[in-house]
Image 1 (cartoon, rainbow, N blue to C red):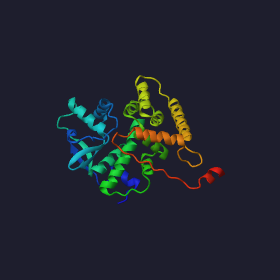
Image 2: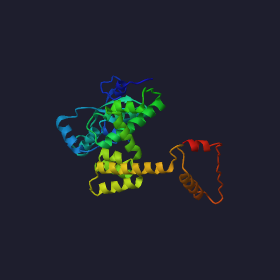
Image 3: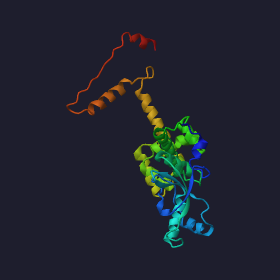
Image 4: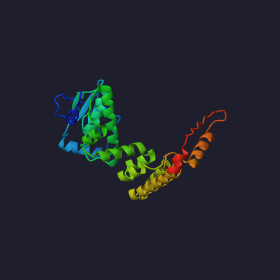
Amino acid sequence: MSWSFKELLNTVEASDPDFTEIYLSPYEVEPSESNFYSQENIEELADSMLTVGQQQPTVLGRVDGVYKIISGHRRNLANIHNIECGALPRDYKARYLYKEMTSALFELSLIIGNAFNRKLTPYEETEQAASLKAALIRAREEDGIIIKGKMRDIVADILKTSKTQVARMDKINKGLVPEAKEQFKAGTIGKTAAYETAKLPAEEQKEIAAAAAEGKDVSHKDIAERVKEKQEIKAAQKAAAIDELTGMMNMKSFRSTVKHHIQGMEEDENGILIMIDGDHFKSVNDQY
């Protein structure tokens, strides 16, 4: 089956007629294990809900008979907080809307359902893009959903951002070491700085993460300059190792490569070197 963007959104729209109203104890529903969205300021929300009531129902997916939260993790925690504080009775039941779902569609619904609820941190935006891509692939493989178009374009369309931003977030997710990602999550490294940092070797990334953890200013311009220097050095090294005419290794690079492989061999390991002699190549050398 082929799903449009609007149909994907309908998996979490409360107006969807496939959702069923139900009243449950907040303890009867489970938070999603893969929920990475902030759970801060629960007490403030709990006080507000006591004053004006719960304005929106928590949306659930029932997966293999288990009620799991798609949208409204903070609301559910606020209700539990009010029960624990005695502001609500122990047998209190909140209003929920639920829909039967497969595990793959639940993960997809979780991301889409939380994509526009509030302003996300740069870290949350980046995690969201990676999770959405993984959820789309999983739904396609497990539920047979046909989603037309390039994956990057679809992710950008759903998250209402550019393909360039999705590519940058993909680089951060794939290239950033855990130490640097932790500082990105904490907000001591910005998104642009995280993107530039992800281009550097692991040890240099760890140095930047350590500096950020110590409260030092981590400038994306400084990191970008370091990346540029690395790229220029790499390009110069490549140019020095390649024959300009043929695009192949020059003799110095060839000898260095062979030496490296020989040194990396075990004592009882054999190696093979194949030499190819081109006839009449002198005429090529004389002409060029």
